[in-house]
Length: 218
Image (cartoon, rainbow, N blue to C red; front, side, top):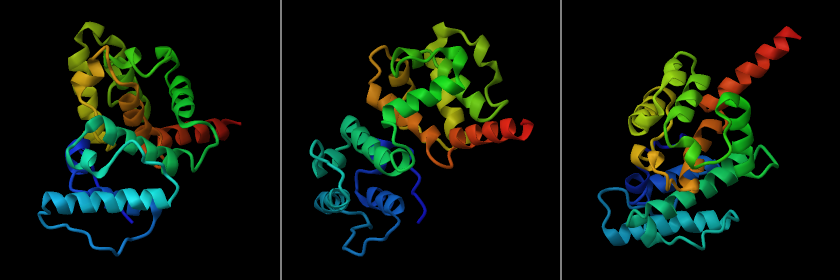
């Protein structure tokens, strides 16, 4: 099953249809219950979302902090928390016994040694770390990252997010203003960055190429 494309996390999931399709793709099975797809009313949206949440609970995922109203109303922070749960359960935890947060950090530190990454907040505010990550994933995409002005953080973030979306298929689930903020929410940052490390994603493929290159020299 093909995973649906998500560009605005607070809007694209609110009617419940995309959320159901996403869960179907992650679980590898199709649901045959009643799904309201054509211009659903608010009540029908709530029913769609509840169906999705029930499917997650049946699969052992705890969703105690979010309800169908939160998704329909576009509560970004709670929706990000839900997406992070999906990433942990179906993308990262399925392939590693390391806690997801530590796994993402360890990967970033290994592929971006010059940036000295230690956190998911201030290290990302000026856009240089994300730009460096883009260059790692696709050499030549952002080769000027070392010369970027850290005082132009917002512009750097805007450009990096746009490049990641257009060339690497990383959904811009976080805004440039949020990424540039000293009050950047750690969960939002981790959730966004985890898209790079998913199986088959640009960061995953780049690391695989590096490993294969090293092996070929041995």
